[in-house]
Amino acid sequence: LMQWPMVYIGLFIEFPTPFLREYFEKIMKLTYPKQRLSILIHNQVEYHKNITEQYLKKFSEDEYKFVKYLNVGDDVTEAEARQQAIHECQEDKCDYLFILDSIAHIDHPDTLIKLIAANRTVVAPMLLRPGQTWSNFWGDYSDAGFYQRSPDYMDFINYKKMGLFNVPHIAHSYLINGSFLQRFTPTYVDTQIDPDVKLCQSLRDAGYFMYITNELNYGHLIDTDNFNISLIQPELYEIFNNVKDWKARYLHPDYHKALEKDAIIEQPPKAVLNFIVRYMPDRQNKLRAHHDASTYTINLALNDAGKDFEGGGCRFVRYNCSVTSTRRGWALMQPGRLTHLHEGLPVTKGIRYIMVSFVDP
Image (spheres, rainbow, N blue to C red):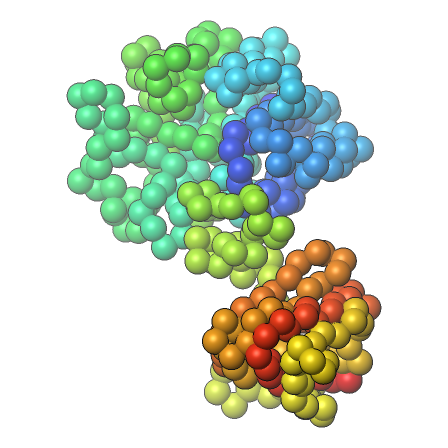
């Protein structure tokens, strides 16, 4: 076991990021002896405090050499935390420092081993936003020191050119050789530019190369641009921004088989109880909280809110979540038994019609 290099992993959560649970899970699945891994977590996002501390506990209870946590209230900036990771690696004489930002999902569990085997001073696995050209490296940079696309950039990200390439800028996920850090201290701290830009600038200015490898599909980047943490389940709305991760969390891995031609559905659902419900102010204007006698319930709007009636809707009591003004022809689907206690909200004017189907009662 002692023959394995000692690796210090720096995890950085600097802004609200969807699918953070999966980010942590993939780190725990790296094929590397945990006794030879130390972890530093820097979290600057109050919203992520609970889930970060859940995984902090898991890391601490596992076989990792040690775990350190810099929380929101510790008043440590991103640049300072990244610099601290370098200093602690230097003090502990670690063999490697592995940096992983919260948007960098390592899908291939052998990534760390492969990066060590590359035997470079600084090397990064190529990561892309799925379906986009956005990556974690620059092929070139301008005279002002910022991004500029290189002529072969598209060949790299489309795997037309594969291998290990010298690049002027890397970010979000990279491995730094510990013996190199004993000779040179890169810097992240600069009030004028981002920490990752400063790091790469300091390496270039000192004449040290950085490399990107696309020899495998190591993982991907998360798109955080429209992540709305004011929602109750914000990842549920990431179907368009992060479709790969959305499918992995919410869909069964074999769901597509049911869509294939001549697919055999072993137990097709059956809606054996279908009925129309009418709500009106002077008769039944609402329905008290209840569970449905079904596995799933489908609630289909038959007329228009605001035109044919006012008020109405469905409120899920446990979650204090109300669905109102459903468009005519649109359906609401929810579990029937046990988990989703719900009530029909009062109709104050007009007549509201819905069709209800109890699936697998």
